[in-house]
Every structure is written in C-alpha cells, then in structure tokens.
Image (tube, rainbow, N blue to C red; front, side, top):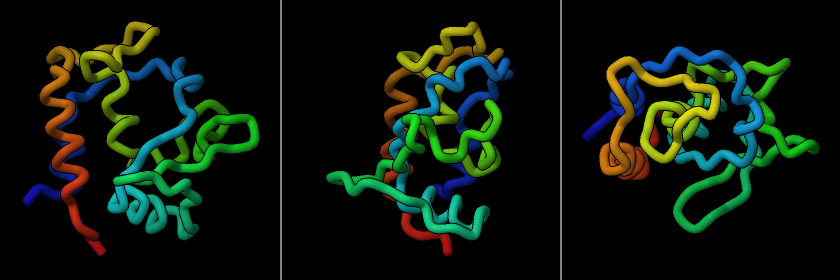
Length: 123
C-alpha cells in the first residue's frame, strides 16, 4: 500500500510564483491529510463532513484557514489537491507555473486521488 509521502512524491514539482492564493478556498482532504495537519499544527482541523471525504472549513472571508500573508502556513503537509494545482491537466495554474516534466494527465491525477482515499491512518 502507498504511503502519504509516496503519493505526494508522485506529483511533479512546480516552481510556484505565489500568485494563486485566490485558489486557496474550499479544500477537500482525506482523513490522513487531516491527521498530518493536526500533527504539524497541534490543533484540530475544522471540517465539513462530506460523503467520502472531508472539506476544510474556510476563514470568514472564504479563504483557506492556513493561508497567512499570501503563503501556505502548512506547506510541508499541504493536501494533495493543493499539490496537484498547477501540476495536472484540468488544474493548470492561471499564472503560468508548470512542472518542467509536464503536467500529470487526468488519469494519473485521478489515480493519485484514488490511492489517497484508500490510505489508513498513519498515526
């Protein structure tokens, strides 16, 4: 079985210009991602229950609660969907940030999401 670290490592690295913070809004996360964020921050992640996954609650202005002064305060454990932004077909960065190796196909991104949803707690 894959680990969270292996799944994250499968996303091609993208050099971010830091201009896409308007995309940091409603974020779907897996339970193992929630646990990683809670471990890093020492605080419970506030979520809205969904059918098969969780969605992090946003701040009062609709932005991600972990966005601080235009930067991600949980960058090292940011959820897969955040990592896929700018790195996968259908999630292209509007500011031109792209992985050197090229974008992941929709199928490859979907496979990573499927593997993520199958993970069990890493605690």
